[in-house]
Amino acid sequence: MTVTTDSDVYYDPYDVEINADPFPVYRRLREEAPLYYNEPYDFYAVSRADDVERGLRDRDSFISGRGGILEVIKAGVEMPPGLVIFEDPPTHGMHRSLMARMFTPKKVASLEPQIRELCARSMDPLVGSDGFDVIAEIGAIVPTRVIGMLLGIPEEDQDAVKARTDAHLRTEAGKPMEVGDDFIESNQFGEYIDWRAEHPSDDIMTEMLNVEFDDEHGVHRRLSREELLTYLTVVAGAGNETTTKLIGWFTKLLADHPDQRRAVVEDRSLVDGTIEEVLRFQPPGPAVARYVAKDAEFHGQTVPAGSALLCLVGAANRDDARFPDSDRFDVRRNDGPHITFGYGAHFCLGAALARLQGRIVLDEMLQRFPGWEVDMAGANLAPTSTVRGWEKLPIRLP
Image (cartoon, rainbow, N blue to C red; front, side):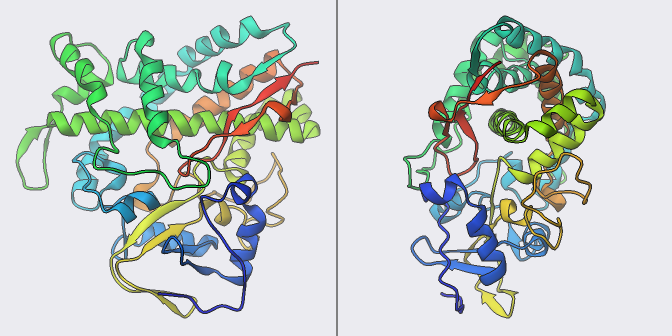
């Protein structure tokens, strides 16, 4: 398997130097090798916005049921039931409609007062200090507490749940994530399910325990314990880590562009647009993988069935054909939607919640800390191959 090209561009999703700033490589891929093949790790990659959208939209050619992470596809592990982000029809539609109950507009909007109260608890003690680590004090705290509220997990247990999730995502620098049959550790929620079954409340966990539906075989039933465990694992993992990275990125980008930060401080109507531009400019999830179910052609060349295809969301979001002057960060940009939350049937169910948290955290930060600088000597990116963002991001306050 190979791709014919005159370019010597090299892309490796595990390369530490490339990952530090992948966008120059992304540009070369778009311009010189829009269909790219990496021989050492045996995967194909597309980088132009139209191609990435096709890879995410065409569910007949590019399937999710073998995983949405490159290492998972290559490992060939069996997906547990209820892993909605890694499913195909008809089970995907069934499980997705049930999970959507967690993220109705009414449920998401109702969380705003609680999220603002969480921000006050996290930020108020920091007012008057010389600075702090945004990830440790805010970015890792607020999303964890919000997911805990949503699922009904006691606050004293939420950090342990996050720690176990983070451990599964961490990699050794420069190496792929290790994937075994137990890469989805769902048993951590077993005790909460059992307790909630005996002590029902008005939270999502109680609702999911009691929901009845017709499955893909026409059987009227409730969710199995395994399905429910997997549901909760997906929500806890996807909802925590990506939002933490979003908070880190808007902190870094607004420090890099103090004139735009001042504009947002003075005009809070720019907050929503700022969050969208951060999501476009530095997507927390820079790539989504698909298993190629049948031969597919890109740019006159064939990606054979059985291959792994990496859809480079981070590259697509910087495609000048879609976003003019794409390497310019602009909180007033209005070029249409980015692809950070996916595309088509697998568009992220938690997008509204992530946006809400990002908007509130940014608004509350600017209210208390209208100016800051990043201490890059103490900052470092998290060592994962699935999400990209800051593990430590200390800031100095004036």
